[in-house]
Structures are given as structure tokens and as C-alpha cells.
Image 1 (spheres, rainbow, N blue to C red):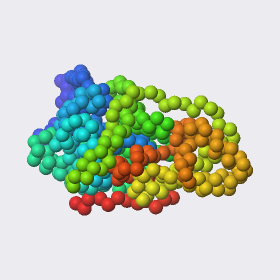
Image 2 (cartoon, rainbow, N blue to C red; image 1 turned 180 degrees about the horizontal axis):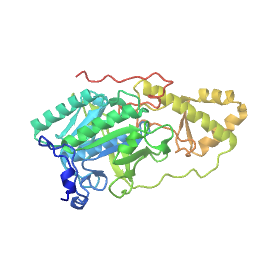
Image 3 (cartoon, rainbow, N blue to C red; image 1 turned 180 degrees about the vertical axis):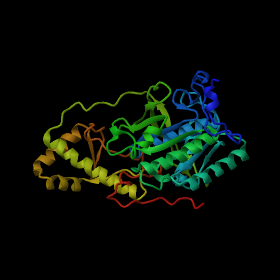
Image 4 (cartoon, rainbow, N blue to C red; image 1 turned 135 degrees about the vertical axis):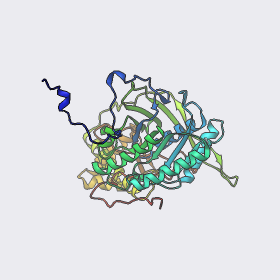
Length: 403
């Protein structure tokens, strides 16, 4: 008598319950067209990262995208999928309110009613806090009857209580961001800062880059003041063309009827960064290296004080002293300063000096946006720091919402 192989397989005594972990036959997997939240640029149900140096326009772009989606208006010519947008802001509500009113004024439309802004940051590396954020989003979605399609985290540093360089801490943050995405199949856009070497992308653990479905780099050329949005990674679609914007001043009325300064984006023609045509001499390069180092130090100090959007001002005398301490002859410093000024690579304004050109790749480090004018333009409030996760620096944590 032959024994069938199947008779040797033990049968379960009790019926097996369906497993929450399932497989699907490869031949049955559909090939769906790309579903766009913003045509060609932001996909639906995705984890996206927008990064760049401090003060270069990341938040302006994220807010502009949010307003267009919440208002069902095209994003500078690119169609959107309308829906509710939830903006988890680090801080600076007054500045955000001015930016929002400036956006509505510039686009000749009403304030977006489907855009909701958090009252405080949340430590999204914590599962408990992330759950509270989900509950808050769900309550507003139920009350408004609008489905969340975009959740913006601006910035990662202000909504992160761990070590950005830790794969474990970053993994917890990513896991919670993914939970927000999966619950509503909404896109989660994380606004983040580039590292000390901007060519290496976003700051901190590479786990974030690996998890992202899309990455976008934001930069601002101090020579032409144009903000450029450059796609760097599109997991499931072709990388679209870069976009360019100019930041324009838009006066708005505050709630007391007083005219205050605001700012919003206007699309501009995209051109590549203008290269530095003239080769620097030894002393000119040395002087510029010193100035850039001082710029980075001052920027980090402002970050730690919560003043990201404040322009960096360096005393001319301090720059001269640092150059002389580095061994530069006094007359050589004077010649280097004059040459750099003539070439338009630095600006001397009274007792202060600043960098006004895009730095060559070997020198490039985060720089900041200069003020539009002497008026209050609403750019203060959002902060980050270049050394927040540096083990040699004291970490200054934001005040999170007490759930």
C-alpha cells in the first residue's frame, strides 16, 4: 500500500486563525498609475523629505504646497488633489500667520479653511506622542468631514526628541511617521536640514534617506536670491524638472488693522547656479575660508538661541583679527578684502561683512537668508541648528506639547 506524501503532513488539531501577515500572488499584483498629490512632484501616500540649509526657503515651499492642496488650487501650474492638510509646526505661529495671509493676498484668494496648524511641536520619536497626534488629526478630520491627504512635519529637529545621528532614534521617528501615513494613506512631508556637507543630503542618520519615497533639496543663491527646489530622489516616478521661486514682500494687515510685513513665493524661471568664474588666489581663499568658518559658528549660535531666520552679521574687525591670527600679513588681508568685494563674493556694510555668492563645493556650508527689508517680514520663528546633534554640543530641546 503506497503512502501519499500529503498524508505525512500533520493536521492542526484546532482550526487556524487567519494571519494578519499575508501574501499575494505576484501574477495578481496590479500595476497602478502614479497617484499624484501635486502633479509630477509629490505622490499620494508617500514619505517625502524636503531638506536644505537653514533659512533658505524650505518652510515657504512647504506652506505654499499646503495652502494649494487645502484650497484646491494648482501649485504654480501643477494640479493638486484637494484635501485636508495638517501642519505640525515647530514654533512661530505669528510668523506662520503672516506668511499664510501673504500667500492668500498674493494669490488673490481666501485663507485655506482645510489647513490646520498645530499649537506646539510634538516629539514624534515617541510612540505615545505620535498616537496623541493621530487622535488630534482624526478628531479634526471627523469634525470637518475632510480626509487628511498631507501631513507636514516642520522641522524634524523641532519635532524630534532623540539623537538625529542614531539609527535607532531615527527608526522610531520613521516608524511613527509611517503610522501617520498609513492611517489615512496621506503623504507625510518632513522638512529637514542638510548636514555640514550639503552634497551628502539631509542631516543625521541615513535611515531617513533610505525610508523616504522622495527627496527634494532646497537652496537659495545669494547672488540672485532665487529659491530652487531640486528633486533628488523619486522612488516610483521620473524625477521632474527643478523649480525656481522668488520671495516677494507682501504687506498684510494684522488683526488690529496695522500694516505689517509678510512674504510669499512667486514662480520664477529656473536657471542653474552661476559658477564662480575667477580663480581665487591663496590669500583670498584663506580669507574666505576664515569668513565662512565664522559664518558657520555664528549660524550655529543663532540656531541654539532659536533665531534661525535672523541674518548672520559678522564684524569686519573680527574677521580681520581672525585672519591675522591665522598668520595672514596685514596688507594681504586688505588686498584680499578689496578683491573679494570687487568680485561680488562678499559685501561690506559699514562695520559688518557677509558672504553674497554661492560657495564652491569644497567650501559650501549652511548659510542664511538675509532680511528682505527693514520691515518685519514674518520670517522669524522656525529654527534649527547645525550642531544640535553634535555630541560635543549641549542639546537644546524644544518644549513639546504636554499630552
